[in-house]
Length: 308
Length: 149
View (cartoon, each protein chain N blue to C red):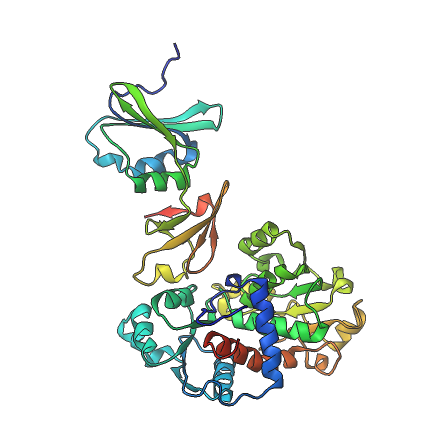
């Protein structure tokens, strides 16, 4: 029997295929059933060293919907970090106040360091340009809802594949499910070598292209990402690639695509998806955002050991 | 009799089959500038296995395990010969460890291990060619990315 009790959620690579399927199954249950008391008496600490309204609120909502309570902060200025306290000391102290830590941090690997430092479960809510595993579970759950099954799909990843951590994690997870992957980006924003190596080791079929029209007719899912201005060290590099891909209803009408193609996006968007797309049958990104609650409910309840 | 390109030593350690470009990195690992006994370094020597190789001979010194581990990362084909009375009494190839702690630096400037006072940690995911994953940020490194500390 699969149990995620006390498991840290740091990187999607820590999860087996069976554990991923278990989380998706539990997410489906949480969406159908309202369980207002299962986390009563439990406290979640939302430690956001880097701002993120959506992820923080979704964890807070998930915890409160299950009867738990939430403490935390969402800006560095109010923490002891500004007084020079180490991350390890901070989290070891906060461990005494709560049952589970949700951490977002600007340094890559901060969540792994936190998990190594405390005995309670730690959830990575995004660290630097590295992993964002709960978003990956949300993405997988949305794909499963859209296609009933996540095996043997053709997935296009569009946009910033270099810094887009959600694309990295999703590609890694989909490698369990025999996906054909198409990476659509300018050369300067290609998927990093590390992830390509992992995919090659796992015999995943993938293709790198620069324009969506080269592969659009193959796709079951198109996963769009925002080109993230904040990840570029040089503004001039951002200027070269911003606005490179713009999807709209008229663009989709001109492209050759499958009728049941679904478009996902972790949001927020800038100009890569026009609002005219929102009312088309392709758009799945708002359902994807709403799925954040049942998926995070399932993850919190699983690692706190109240659902099996 | 084969003529030696680098003179023999009577007692000490010979590190042979060093990847040519790593010869001086190995010399740095061994901190040779502070060794008072004989040190002989050969560079650009011909090697059937490597094409060109380096060799370092150090009088009166035995390598520590940490030194061997460090050498294995940048010169994975290196062999270590222990010399006594001008004879090779022990010979072994360096072995890349499965995990590495402390003596390497993550090449990712945004990795938490480069900003907090913690020991760096790495997992060797592939030995030939060497690929190393940072325990914290999970970035992969190859031989050219390795920075020893």
